[in-house]
Image (cartoon, rainbow, N blue to C red):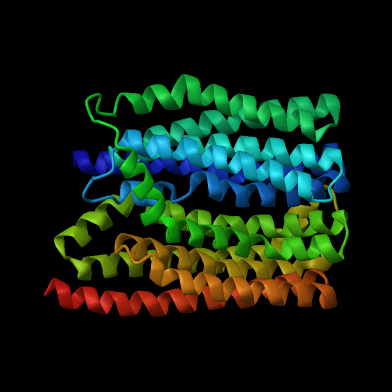
Length: 412
């Protein structure tokens, strides 16, 4: 009974916090579209996408391997040191990228401060991993609520006063840093063993052992944003904003998958440790049913009332893009299911096996998006999403089925 209450508490707070954190970019885009106009909305769409890709460099292997580390060989302090190093590497790469690209100073400044904000989030993530591993996932949710609410309010106030995205993005960095100092770090430090020694070798081992997980995550983030770069090459900032708007509702599907999986990762890990592969399969199957059912509801709502709602929220005419919205929602059902497959494979520690999938899918969407966007505009971007996401899920499902069949033999 106590465990059920703890699971419910973790689920509720994490769901609220993750929802706010995930939808912050949606709220930012709404505010920017209404306050600054479609030009700045397009700038935000592409710079936020780029910042999200650089975020993967900073977060590196991410929280999943940290919380599924069954043996516990690598200590919390070593994870923290590794994250500080990757954040520094990210900052260096961002500066190089800003120097080499052909953005103007305004667009480059927006990019740099969005990247700095994402770097603070990457550092928070390692502290979240410590909390989650100690069954304190609800504290992660509380942190995300504080950070998201404070950042959004500050962002909107500054943007309304200045109509300048650079100043607004600076406030995001400040609010995030304050939350880390006054909440995240104090909560995490109490869960870290004071006596555990730091071994630099273990820090290096994180980079070596988790490289393929990092590479997979990096390619995944490019996969999600590839059509935006094709749009940047062939179309206008206004069209970039339009695609960003119709793409945004689809983000609820992988978010829902995270809601379903996050509270049960520890349970799945323990089941794997016990060799109970059959129970793992049952949980996975149930998760897939939830995702598909939710996806069908999302597609139905997207087709019937999605565009009118988006028109009202953003104060723009999106009526020509109803089919595009439904296609993207359909594509993201497969991406959400693929997320579950990757979680299971990560618990199996089958990371290298996923790498080939990401390479194939990345090449597919790179070629298809640039060709189709050049030929069909936003429709081409939508088609490339459908093709790549279906391929993504099918390949991961095949690998997972093969690896699970091997695990079944081992568990006997």
